[in-house]
Image (cartoon, rainbow, N blue to C red; front, top):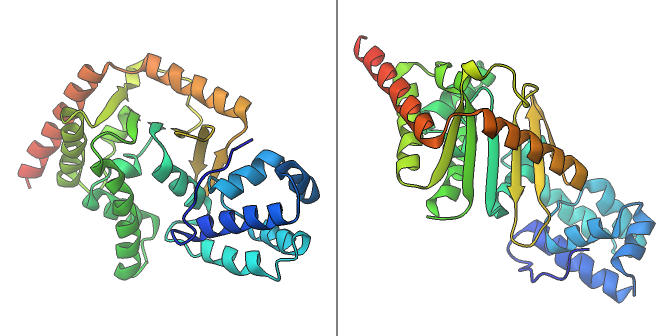
Length: 280
């Protein structure tokens, strides 16, 4: 069960909710397990809410207001959590990503968000929403670029990505956009900021054919796994499920090119795009 963790209630709605939850639970002389039983969740889940590692959902907030006689406190402040710049299915994953010390990811179709350039992100969002006004696309791009600032730290999080060869070959935004995007990844590799491997088409069938996956490890929290699809995403904390994702990732890594060979391929494809762009 998660132990106490110092929170700054002014830092975020999640920290405020966690701090207040711990205060009211202890004032009610309830253990995490006892409160969990009243809400039909585990005591460890209550601990995660208190230490800020999980987001409180509105139905949980309403139940907590009733059980702890909180006079609507949790419902009112939980609403602030719902006002996010990220899609609903990605909010918790984005917050977890920001706390992670290690991120491992397999990307089957697109360059991962943390590694995207502005032009690449804009091309992706425009395809997602072809009729959206430009201001909407601008907001989406800004939110994505905000995530990339995680890599401004020279060491954390450690990012290890496996890119399917399709990621390199899919011409998102045209040859100039792709050349810039792949050169950006190559630069991060050469700066020893990230580890990247390419899963080549020649590898054939592999363990992650069903889609993308992301693994996140933390300094003082259990690991999480995240998988997403069109408009949906699932953050998994069940230990057995996370272990299965870890095995899948390890199998993908085993089928991928070495980091050195992957860098050579990325730079070669980037050069091809540059030559193509010059022809126009």
